[in-house]
Image (cartoon, rainbow, N blue to C red; front, side, top):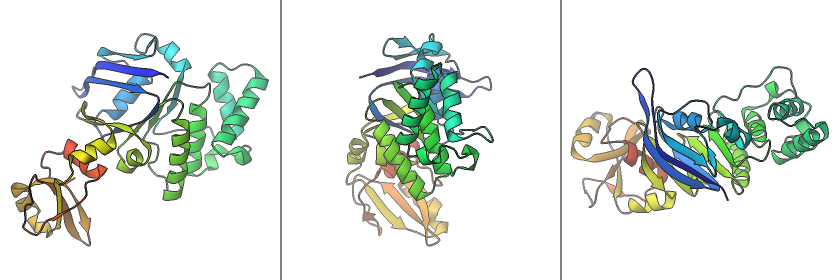
Length: 294
């Protein structure tokens, strides 16, 4: 069992943007979802943990490894799938994994061959091992991305926005693969897609403006909103008026009209109906302060 401990991590970019503001969190083996809108600081946190950028202050440790001061040690036990996983042109899946294994320090050819076969089997791509990765579908590229992240039995795997652009079938296959991987190591899944976390993770955090605004179990967060969420379909021109009268969590268009969800301790009447809260309600309630358009 590994432990990742992040304490008071802060990062401000030269343009003055405070990407991380005293972020503290502790994780153990399993799938951990990191939710947040674009610009919330998720990628800054992932890049810092992946030793791709330095923090201004704070600490981060994986077991006995000081991530900020021992980046080379961390990289030995790190698997990383960035948001954009580029591939070499005219190289097969088998060749790509073999090359990346060499870069990770595996110099024994027989050992590499066995590991590449094992990884291709694990992500169900062994029958495509001779095909060019450049011609793979989005889902297949993500699977080869997970395979390279598993090189060397990592203790920590960071996956940044992994399902963007995948069709529903590819997304489901990717979910199953990640869930299988997450039984044995710490997997941090950074995403703005609520379904990713709802399907996969037993623990989660929500980030906004560089801060952790919620940390806990998805079910716990949903239960906190029980009997407090109401919905109503309104006219588009009524949106501002309703925003001034109610605490709107979110709105989305249904049949050309806004369907609004509001948070209220008591039944507001006015044609609203109580609905069972979901993780999307949690997400928007944590990041919005009566924002009308989300």
